[in-house]
Amino acid sequence: MATRSTLSPARIALIIAATAVLAVFLVLPLALIFVRALGGGIGVALAALGEPDALAAIRLTLTVAAIAVPLNLAFGLAAAWALAKFDFRGKSLIITFVDLPFAVSPVVSGLIYVLVFGLQGLLGPWLQAHGVRIVFAVPGIVLATIFVTLPFVARELIPLMQAQGKREEEAAFVLGASGWQIFWHVTLPNIRWGLLYGVLLCNARAMGEFGAVSVVSGHIRGLTDTLPLHIEVLYNEYNLPAAFSVAGLLALLALVTLVAKSLLEWRLRGEYQAAGG
Amino acid sequence: MSVIPLFPRVPHLGTLPGFRRTLGFTVAYVSLLVLLPLAALVLRASGIGWAGLAHVVADHRVLAAFRVSFGIAAAAAVFDAALGLLVAWVLVRYRFPGRRLFDALVDLPIALPTAVAGITLTELYAPNGWLGGPLAALGIKVAFGPLGIFVALAFIGLPFVVRSVEPVLADLPKDIEEAAETLGASPWQIFRRVILPPLAPALMTGLTLAFGRGIGEYGSVIFIAGNMPGLSEIVPLLIVIKLEQYDYMGAAVLGTLMLAASFLIMLAINAIQNWSHARLGH
Image (tube, rainbow over all chains, first blue to last red; front, side, top):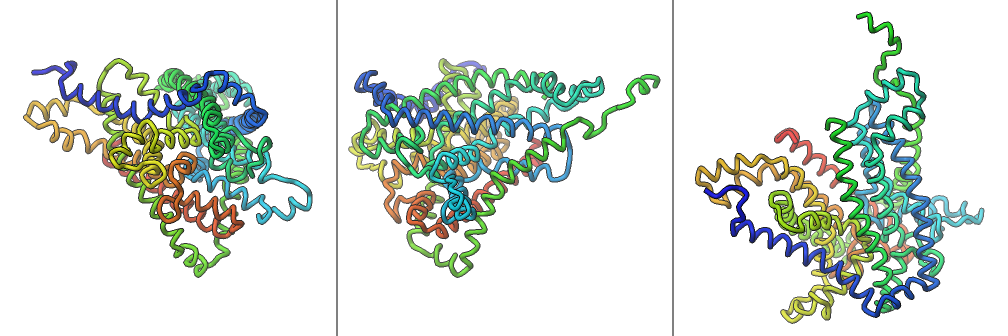
């Protein structure tokens, strides 16, 4: 009888089928990005990234991520502390609301802020009277980005901190540690890889978001175009080498994210195992 | 029992500090950023009334967009369920060179910004593209039509199925399969009767997640779709078009319908998981 470790023809056929699927579905698109980006040589690609509009888009994307990611990090820590370390009524409802941005269409995520802050929106007339622009300006882009990336850190930390329980924190508390001391010296070291994992995914989405940002941006070139929006502009102008150069930059970010994610998953398993889960 | 007096403050539930502050911040943050804006959307849409709603929804272009979005998302999700099961099976069960690389690559559609995916798939499947060229020679037009939307949604949805199925498959004991094999079951029988039933909830979860992502997807679709009204125009694009025409009410109505669909999908996933817990204990 054949043992489980032998490679039967059927098994080889399945492996070939699955890798062929992944090659056509995932590797080919990835290869195309870099072939198109570097088709005119690396100099052309770098020149496209050095254009004033491209530089402005890079700056805006970094700025937006630099605001949205720390805010959602703080939120994720607070939410995980409240939801994982305590029991109270209505907890699952809050978790459902935290999850909502993942379920909603990116376009709807942008639309809701237009309906609140836009000229025809709830607060529109008041904002206009006071000369504040939120939608079709940078604050709207930041808000939409915060919305679509809101669950990442919280969703990573809540199950991890639930698995870890609160015995260590309670021990520290009994020994006289303050809340902040418990958090810094007991909780944070236990969750650091999970935290990093959440931040990594949050950042990747913050820098790559298209739909939600597209709705609130107003598409003012050099002012409210993030990198993904800049790709759309270049593509619609049939400037494919430049579009794929910028796309290549974001694809590199995605690849770095994937590598870091694989490494962190290995560390994260350690944190779950340490929790006995 | 002499130990107890040494610890006069034996902690009970909720004795850790910071509960009120962190919960307050959490509720305020979610309310301001998620709940109030979503409420504004529903409030705006509700102003249209039932007759107005019927008028918006009965529009041919709107009806067609819902058919395109939901129909193609469903087809792509079913396609992903089959393909994702194959990929998960091979990645979990077999050891071969490059396995870890392929496993890491499965998340590419989630990590890759949707606009990048959009222009890349368009170039790949365009009539002069690497795949679009040979397919065009066979008379199959992918990019700039409904099939393009299908390709984009299948790309975006694949990781959801693979990542839902993988952990359950890894925990599946192999001895039942071996017993079935010893008892003379054919590979197909083993697959249908032994492997598929315990995987069904995870497969359904992955399929539903892919479907939910598919109906709302925008960036990866709009480049490849061709965006012909009635034929390859998706609901999210129609929302954007209505906004650009300053038809805020129409956009709000469509947005609310999409929000309701998202809610139903979240409920469906919850139901699948409860059913799975009750039936299979995982």
